[in-house]
Image (cartoon, rainbow, N blue to C red; front, side, top):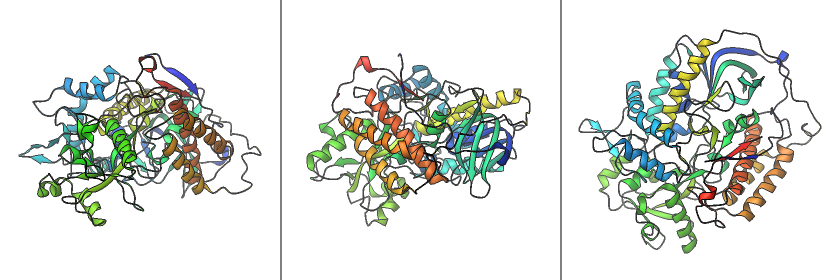
Length: 541
């Protein structure tokens, strides 16, 4: 596959002006940006002689990883086989998976799951063996889960405890990464901010980017509001290549109750036998695919969207009435409690659901070792494009990717850092100049712009796309960026908005460039999947 490269101007190299003589400096061996499953796994892989700093912009407990419900996929059943998991992953990826990466990740899966158990993660069991469930797109039950429907929460509890006890790991919560620092073509660390110390230069021999996804760019999302694509943006401004930015995966079943937060209803609910029905009680998935509710997520999301349009109804419904009530309560305690808070009984009531932005497939281009295109910078997890997911992620391969590449990044960055001498001299960096356009002469309503951006992206770069809407979206985003992204904003709310603006422009540009429908990228004006379009689309400044 010969990749195509398009350019999205970042408008500025650094978001804020700085004077290196007036900002505190800290030196460490390895800097890890992000405290989800990939970041913490990378930290735990560090040589204990290396000082490692982990920075996370919220509390350590807040990450997309902690919100993951369904589980982590791996070949753990003697009746299953690596070739089955590989084939399922490649089939879901619709022609854009990298065979060698898929093989690497799937073959490591059982080992990485056992690592998590060693750390103290307590997975659900049946008769002393790991309980495995079936999810959409999988040919065999191979998804290990914990606390019924709170796998991410349990895995992160165990990993966070291990990291917090390690003397060589310092964890900085509530710290925002403004930009990566580069000098002579190499990543040298990051400029960060927190409310207690203000701005700080963190110089590192090696840096690992594990900042997670981009769901908060969409009005309807399963992600926490911290998922603002900061890592994608800082990498692009630093000169990294991004890839596959048109591919945002939409989860088919998000609890839809007006006025409430959108809450994920795990794929495992359908894996246990729940059916999707429309407002008339019709089980409609069989009208779209023989796989019905267990089709891959792109198929189910698009079918739900079409059925909502046919019935002129804002949602469809999950019907669990065919599953024994005791099993539902035992298997999905957390989802059941959320439903109960709204007066719904999962065992008898139909649960209103509709798709929402869930997992960012595109990201920073990396190789099999986790290297990015910027020397000194590694990346793992949802911020990356590794070649595992292709054009559509197979359910429960995301936590798996995080632990596999988190470990690889940690080991490889550790090895390089051990070979580098200590150097406590800060390279000379030139501060971006202050221009009239960047001065804050009148305040902006950041909340209004953010809400407008999220609504625009949901409408125009959502589940169904077309050229007219994408062109209009790019024009609107470029107009907003012309005055939002040139300003020197002063706090995380402003920097998040500038990051969201840059990444939204990248996503719209890539979606416009891909003139076909493939996986999660559905173009109503180009409904066919075309061999001539089977290539990666790369983004550079």
